Length: 443
Image (tube, rainbow, N blue to C red):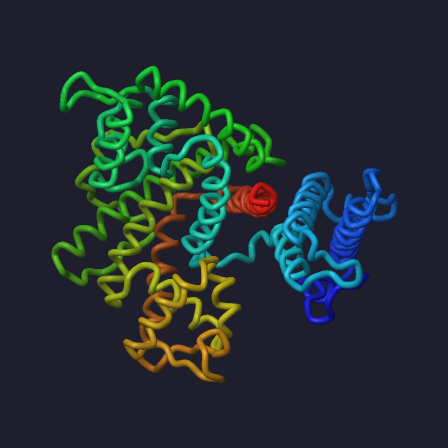
């Protein structure tokens, strides 16, 4: 039994040498397990053990992540075999199986490579936050949906009230980094579901007995997910990470307030220099945003929300583009011409969402497309006008990130980025595990 030549995950691996050894071992085990399952259907019955040589290569390449990687690959292989059913072939591995296995290998790959400390450009912090949180949210939706059907903001409010205690909507809005209108809609849903309550209209919100029960149920799963995301992160490192997030959050709120003033006044005042004091309408009087430290992702979500909201205003003011349109144009402008699949991979979005945005940029004359007919066969580059906006976006991103990181010492910055790399690695593994379990559960 062999892999299709064009879909060989080993050939598509991003790195050679020792990394390829663990990758090949996992792929070989997946193929052997698939064949074992086919033989079992024909009358077998023994469990397939991982060979000593493969196990040694996996542990050497992945270290403490080896067991989790094996569990992901085995869950995917079992689910794929169930989906194939009678159509399973003993001669060749289906191209879809190989392609999906390649995606899983790429997801596991960061665990085998040490973080690139000191090489990250400050201008990509927002992009990396987006991509990390997108992965966490996708895996969370799959995991929590098996327990209770609530949207993300509803869950975050339940967790916040459980961990912090009664809060008024304005405090909830600042704590989660979401505007008051969205919080109001979420509060209304939770009141209707009788999960939260308040004595009168402007009184603090608190959990009902029903809400307490559901939040505790969800928090058990949240705690498990949090342990996975903080794998290989010690208590002291975690405490330092939270301390840095508090500083970054203060800066992000100041940046948002400053940009809100600029946008409302329709002025083009000079961008605040890194470290400069900024007058704030809602922060600065000694009040601090309530930060939920019970889960590592919660404060990152709040930080991303404020930074993203100020970014939306900045890019709209400078380029007339939405936040996501600016991001897409930025990715196209980084290394043009870029092929469709490479662009979608960078954006970490589905083809439909990326396609609508790219089509809009092409329609506005900011992006040009070359190549064969069909969106997925083309190559994309910024037009002359798009290049001007790309340069504006790049400069604004550098200024925004410099302002955000200004209060941090060199050690704080390097420590924060190193911990962030670990969380991102764990999030990739967590997402691929959930995808594999989701496939298995649908068979």
